[in-house]
Image 1 (tube, rainbow, N blue to C red):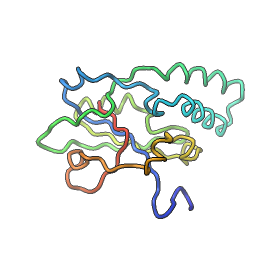
Image 2: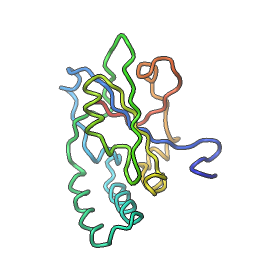
Image 3: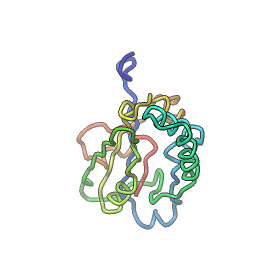
Image 4: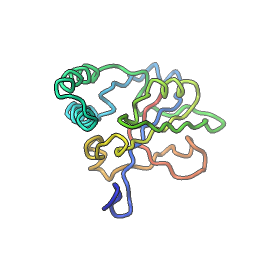
Length: 173
């Protein structure tokens, strides 16, 4: 095992935002910030603490920032989790969002939600090493335990026939 690769496979968590039909949006609840952490408050705290510690934030500042992170856990976002993809006669344009150092795949979720509402598919992979944390510190345990990632049933609808797409915990705009 080296560089996050084990047995020829590497875990890459990808968040996806995509267009959905407005009628579906009216019937489906909006997601919450805590959904990015699989509803696991301990994972949110562990992730945020690790990011701040490894970036040299003072202990007192870490504790006050963790209070802010905890307060955001139930914050309602502008997207819907696991909603069906909108029907379209043509493939949706694709945007790949690659977060920066000390950020996460959902760091710019407001932009991704906006793009999805305007007909784009946005894929945002997690880069654990860019965040200075290991995948086990930031990836929801259910993803790690159930065989990593699954192939999206509607991968062809998202990208046409351009290849295999693996997505989990999809988010719709």
